[in-house]
Image (tube, rainbow, N blue to C red; front, side, top):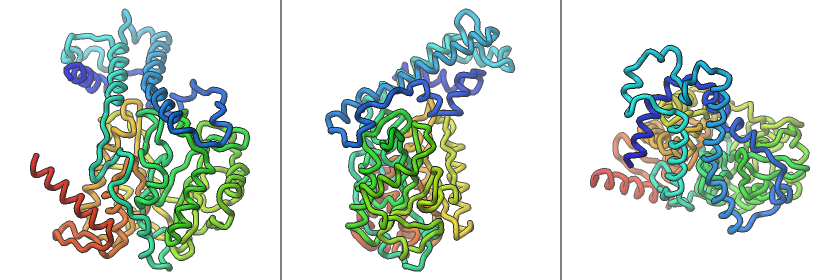
Length: 444
């Protein structure tokens, strides 16, 4: 613990004053700049659409868990390049602080031990982050859940929405990088399976596909997610077949390949693994009645119209969070977009991403800090019959999903007056979960 605190104190004092081109380029372009040097020939598992065995998936997770060490190597290389290009910024193996701070000896003196080897400390810090991740335990809170299964399910909540209500006026939960379950701290964004997410109440899916010779495998950056697009389509079709009162919105975009021509492969997969009639075939926003039992594709790739265009939504996706010290700016972006949604264009779907990541702030770390603020924001709202749009999260918990769902249901919790009027099994479980949280806070 003493080592961790020492390195964190060093990092927090130095990160704002470093003039380091390698760091700047990585933090601006993450994750593409990190994964680009690792591009390799597709593996057999990626070029042949099939589900990997659980044992293989676990082995892949263990091997890619050390992606943090890849970041160590790249950052070290970036600093070495900077030293070569800017010799005035180095001295005897040290990286110097920026020109405006070089004469500020008080800053350097405040760091234990005086001048330090910044490269070495940064590398040690990243290694510590990797070690901490390997020893982490699962967490299940009302706002954050990285356990394998949701606390409770809410699979048919859209049944109570009037048929004439436009989908743009429906408030719904979503997940960022829906299928990113493997790959270590920099790649993992969820722990629930697709089926569990849908049954928990998630209605917006963020699907990233790598295109290799007509095959579409699921990726988050360099990390192959042991699934292919056909399995996603099958999962959505099975869910809608079981719950025809629901609809699912799915953003589809190309990831970790640059063919810019996935339209034909997407259409082929729809015919092979689902059916053409499953889709909503219009660029217009459907009503709830028109969308029931349908998959609404939000097309984030070129080609003829397959459904609605992703770019037609009003989107807030300020994903870059360089360090956990920048979570405040991330939350401000989320807050402002949620505040604008009720008065925004009712014919346009609002989409707010609460997720974020950076070299020193992996998705879990950001979600553990942003999700509680989102939970408190939603709980403080007294007018529950207002449109917030799609709220897209990393590691959401069943209670916060229930809170988002409640914004178009009259039977919801009045947090200001302390009155609880609930209906349905899921709502009661949400109330029980909230009471458990209050008891825990009281005891500690």
